[in-house]
Length: 337
Image (tube, rainbow, N blue to C red; front, side, top):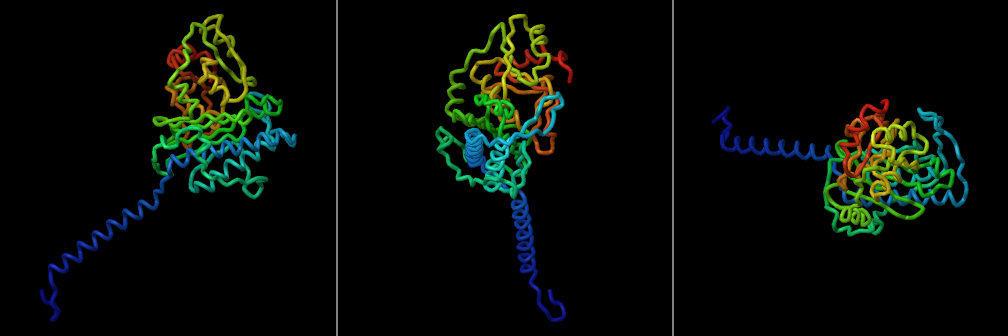
């Protein structure tokens, strides 16, 4: 081809066109990959456990110094006091901003709302894998799209019991949800330094592995229901009507504590008949699911833990290791929603 005396090679034009198409194609792929950052779940589990332990240290510290500075957020829908202390705030700062600095871009939802500037304590995560109390090499090196992850943290579960020095109920918790489903749960007991964590489909802390390998027989003609001290409602009458007069109802504090009581076989069913926040239950949901159990609304619906969902679960709660469908069926319609 010759245009005004300029010789143009058709093959050369074709080569240039192909190169241009390839460059545009890979440029688009690179741009797409940059917009979809990923988070390493293995590292996030180590960070979550460390954050829970760090928060727990602040909780214990305030109990020793007696500098509680007890205040009230007001009343819950059921009329119970909703307290907050220095321990809640300090634990939040250690946990929330520790995770936030180590994993920027993650959506983290906490019970407390305190700006970093107002935080009295700041702790940097070191990703100390020794806190796992398990074989870190069993953790799969897996990356997940950061946009799909929501982290729920409860800096101090059972604050009311904490103010009453009922420390065995107290926990700090972290939960990792992917696509709205709980996949990692961490429940730490700061006063006994016991930590329970699980990654669904992978591995867990040694105490949970022991529970999975040697499950407690919870099948009984007389189930034991564990309920909140402050939200017992009509549980006792209803459960006895549904399962017989020998049914036991045990009041206890803290959602994390109650979930672990199910794990240990000290209770058969964890039931909550009123509104409950998702940072209270997400970690326990993940741990029970890892062990083959279930946690749903009282109607048997799965709970959505995505960042766009309401932080309030208003469908009540039912959790068990076995026989979940039976409990749902027997209790359905017996409680007001």
